Length: 84
Image (tube, rainbow, N blue to C red; front, side):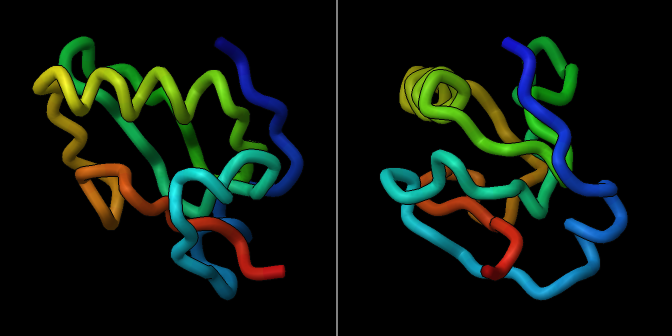
């Protein structure tokens, strides 16, 4: 699953942000890194446009017990995204 990078990671991470419900995150630009563990490889980095398939993948795996130490909301009920 490859996401489209649409913004420099530093600009997305350090710029103005919103915290949005998971069901409204698709199409928005991530402002945080999300690294599911295992395997410990980033699935989302700041500056990438979030897609439904990655949101579903991450939320399904969290529900199954996967650890996500990076995001502001480890439950992935909400996502930190670049403010519009």
